[in-house]
Length: 155
Image (cartoon, rainbow, N blue to C red; front, top):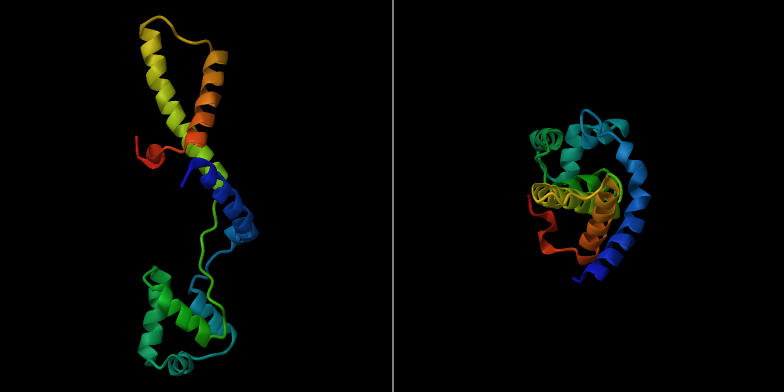
């Protein structure tokens, strides 16, 4: 995918994902969603087991696996259906995808600038602070526009 297409894809995804921004502050109940919802609607473990066509011990295991983060999406879909819920799966960016790319580009640019500043310092050709700031902004813009495959390689 070309860099300009990636930018458009980020913008469109940011627009879609922005609707989920309020979910950033939603905490998972200590006993997990399955148990919390089951308790709230007054369904016993045995009743949920019957709806899932499993035994009561399997429901206990599902609830434990959820708390430990060892549950599959397939299992969660089935449990949600049995609880008359819709299973929702997704990622909610901490900020925006655009900001994630910008932050990474800035990190890469800082490392590149540090190397080049060191060489220029040794050659007595160091840039002024204003020139460094402009060069940094230009480098960040260039990295974002080019979106090199190496952007996410660890440096």
